[in-house]
Length: 297
Image (cartoon, rainbow, N blue to C red):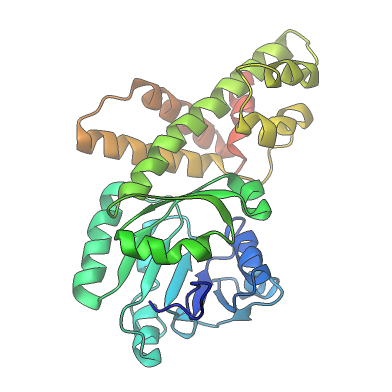
């Protein structure tokens, strides 16, 4: 991966997956003056991003650096094979050592073996670089990016990551980024659920939730979750955002990793049960703060 100029940015960049996180990331990259190819299964979502070059297939999006912002590893793996896949696109473009960045939250166990296969079979460097900060962080360009993979690859990616992230850290070999994200998701899920319980208790007592949140925000109970998500409980608006089913998926990855490492996580088990109940109730597409409703039933 050769830089295009003294600013250290890659010569060519593509972003695949222009959903709630991918779209604002793309806009920040374009705003930083980087030519960006875009691909999304629903083409209209990619076309809605001004300034990007929309590619009809992953093959035509193939670039020296390909950022994927997709829900899970199987969706990333599906981009590689076939005449319309990335492997064919890289070959056609003469790109011998591409870097594939996985920004989605994926299994730390699975991504390690996936990266090894990509390197050994096709010469593709995989960097697992999950994100923290939510859609607001993506829009504001202040995501935290925890990168796992070859340290030199992450170092070369830092100028690009800086266009949409304020905290960019190499945390270890491939899979380490996803392991840190697993740790992050324990805290996020626990904080969301704790705040939802607090709001449920306050509501049951007839209290003004806005006033309760003001008190929480003034002390040790304050958090980024409260700052970003607090109004959802006040307004009872749980549409969109980070879905409960994705929260459960992340917790399942945590449990898988804990089993792999022989580590007991009793709180994670409780959180899994709570979000399994919410998803089973048909509320899996709601924002994870909607666990409030599940607690109130």
